[in-house]
Length: 231
Image: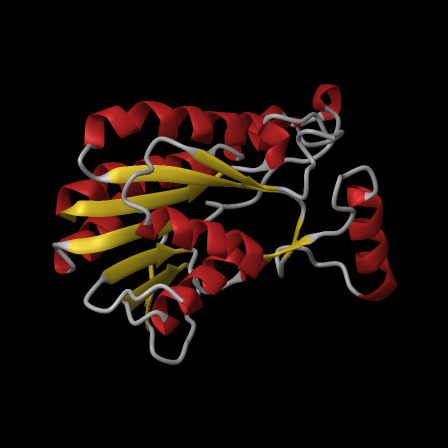
């Protein structure tokens, strides 16, 4: 376990799924962690705050109150995402899928000026950004934009580092499916992957932890996708 003693981290979308796993790993490593989400939550040893990544005033207030913080992790989706065939897709739904990107841009633009000069940020894309999967054109377009943003903005926010994690199909509470339906969905969705199973939130969070603690990495995307992209 990496020692994060003396470090302060803000994890947006930090109370569920990959964000929660990252929150818990940082806490267990000794960091002071603030987990932000739109809903009210409680996590042992963590300060939980209600904040919407699309609310710039609320984000600014959060960052100002924690000036000098070390790590920013944003795993928030920003809202619902459009799924289905592109030519049948509601265009407002497609556009609204980009709330994830706007939330990421808001957090980096407003957060970095309040970070330590040795700070680091981590965002999350998704394997449809680089691997076609039926029904995920909106999600893939957003993910591709996130990855481009990371590559480019790394040049402008240095010495603060920024990197991304590209998850594959991950079994998290974001999916409402249960029982056999849930098992079948993940089995079918990963049957052509080199590692034919769904990933876990902890497997993605461990990549985020690596990107936070390794000070020789910036502008990079790490794929945690079970070989989905190369299959």
